[in-house]
Amino acid sequence: MRAVEVLPGVWHIEESYRDHCTLVCGADRAILWDTGQGTGDLRGFVAERAATPLTVCLSHGHDDHTGGRAAFARPLIHPADRWMLAAQDARRGGAAQEVGDLLPGRRWDLGGRHATVVDLAGHTRGSVGLLLEEDRLLLAGDALGPTLLMLGAECAPLDALRRTLERTLALPFDRFLASHSPRPLPKELAAVHLRHLDRLHTEPPSRPGPYGPDLRRSERKERGLRSVLYVHRSLLP
Image (cartoon, rainbow, N blue to C red):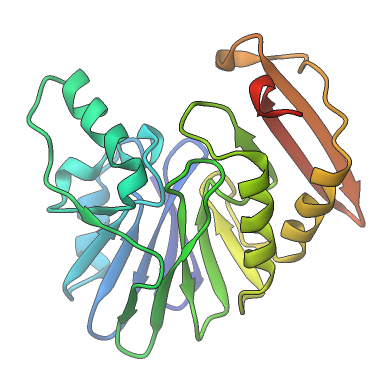
């Protein structure tokens, strides 16, 4: 497990290969944003750096972001993605973990640092982000990154993704952290994604991977930024 302190008190943690979560520390409280796949000693990493009370938040319900949640009490997740946690617990044959609601608008005073939950529906219907106000940094999970995945029954329609990108561009941040990127990315990438939605050039990917034959890929490049969308065929007009 590797970690980079991208800002004082903000660690972007590669819990497993190319799968990141983020620890945000203030003087009075800390937030752990996602729990990775559950392969590393995330609890020990957090305990070494955060002596304050801890709140665990899940950006969305996919198991590569929720796999380590059992090590923490009562993680928070948007109600629209709660069913995915229940399905994961059932597959593992254990009791359903107690979770709380993570709704847009919730705000924490961490002590010298304020954090607000924002709606990032698209990748899943319950995807949310965490805006670190003083740092002008957005923790975006899988909702925003160089590649946007719109794949399963849990994802929102493309018009909902468009509204999310429009709202995101109005938020007061300069950079964002994505779960599968090792370093902060510029806000302008959200604008490239938005323009990309107007000019999709979809084709079957050369390597469809685990997502099946109905996957379509589109790519757009602007001023050194690249937007890649993987979209299930059922979502396309």
